Image (cartoon, rainbow, N blue to C red):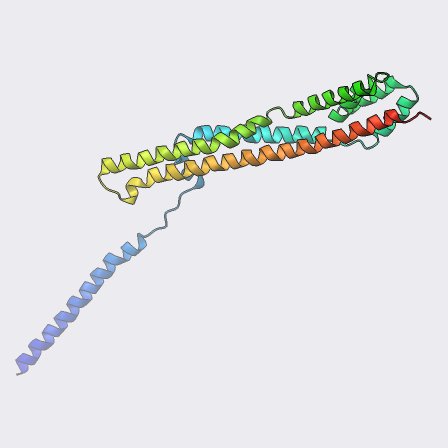
Length: 245
């Protein structure tokens, strides 16, 4: 009986030792597995580079769009400088017969408004309709100079999303090509094509939106300047019709 009890005790101790050893081994094996789980991060630059070769023309479009937008806004801002007393100063000079000084004052201002008025002053003495026509032509010409390159923004806004769509097609083609090579649809196989598809689409839309907003922004500034020049033209013609004191 004593031998039977000793055998049971020995078996229990052996079982406990085996469980402890198994637990220890399991702990040693699972701990590194938990440590091996790391967060995978990707930089914005690497993500963009996964967009494929279509991003090269899109990048060029973005640079051209930003250059034209900034250059036109600076030029229009310079041309939109106000000189509230210009017409009144011209009125005194013209009514006193000092036409040469009036033209010199317009040239010194170097703005579209002043250039337009200078063309009208140079025709004083002619019928009022001829002066009006000269003002209209000069004003239209000055506005057309400020519109230089603005049409490119419109073009960029239209074709950039199309280039992004072309990149999407290339991405889909790459997805099916990679699936055919690997003979599986695992995410690791199709991820490259998915990156190219989505990034090229978003890139085209971003460039298109910037160009679209820039185009209408520049046009709104030009419209404000054109309306102001029309008001200046009317004020100048009314001034010519006033009797000199």
